[in-house]
Length: 69
Image (cartoon, rainbow, N blue to C red; front, side):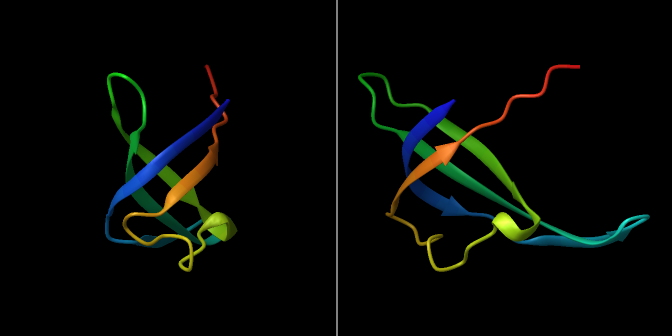
């Protein structure tokens, strides 16, 4: 699923170490540009975190992968 939204907030970076080594996660809040805008929290994991694009006000094209158990 493709989502285009405006970045409105960057939350603190989370890091840690698990059984497979070090990990990092960046949560961001984006707002859609629809008739009824929605705010969505998106988690970015590992090497996908790109600090140069994570500037408040930027429009982001986000590819979502939904995993259903």
